[in-house]
View (cartoon, rainbow, N blue to C red):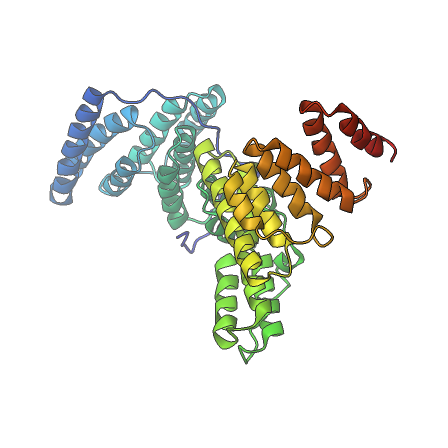
Length: 421
């Protein structure tokens, strides 16, 4: 994706942005059927145009324009429109035509009338070629984004990129890929943008902060000659992760683990890479205009991988109870008290891990076993001073529970210990 060899002579704006999604009424069943009929006719005319020439191609275009008026940004309609446009006789626009077209497009975009902008773009693609065609493809991609049709936007941007390289095309592609959650593809296009136009602000503004490894002068760290060189393989994997090349980093670690399958440092590094990758994706999503559904999916993915990693470490490292405590915290946040208690069982001695006893108390509270919860708070409080974060949390939560259970004196004593700090 994003191939091409020429550099565009256009000097576009350095701050090109995809618009926010707007409301657009869904099609009724009758409209859907009618639109499908128009599309089927367009397919037939486009097929005839291969031998019949331009009249059939223009008939196909007329029907596709009607389809896109109904369902703007539909990638199926866009792909056929772009293929069919190759059958049309097009020319370079006059200076006046170019000026009037740009004025109408800018006015439509400023008013948020993206349907009119799409009409302008279709008119341009039917009639003209050259620089204005690239403008039309990019503005049409912006229309697709406004109608929440990002796959259609990517089709248009890829088509524009194949015609001529442009920083604005790549910048819009970075944004579209990021909104779709395709973060590795977005980072790859961002690197292409940075190589094409280092001064273009989108190369830095649209993705995560760069590390020192992102400098063009910093060469990629080569792999060690021997894959069993664990330290060298770990450094090489970290180098690739710092560059946002998560898949390459995973491959390096897989190669290292195949050479040293029992090395605990490699297993830990693999787990850390999974955590870092999904958290990186979520951070990107939160900074971008992504749909609530995709954000929720990413939150769920982070939760699932964190739970898997903490559970695996708790099993693998029984002498480090903090991993079981972290897994229990995730489960408690979801209201899964019984599952949290399974993670914490058997409870480690309070002197070793008082946090486990606080989480146990919380799980008892969730199951309305308040006496048992209060007893667990007492155990944790007896082993930790109020100045300790765990002891502070135990006293604060225990005081609320004691007060609710009518044990005002106990609640007051624990609060007094906090206030004396």
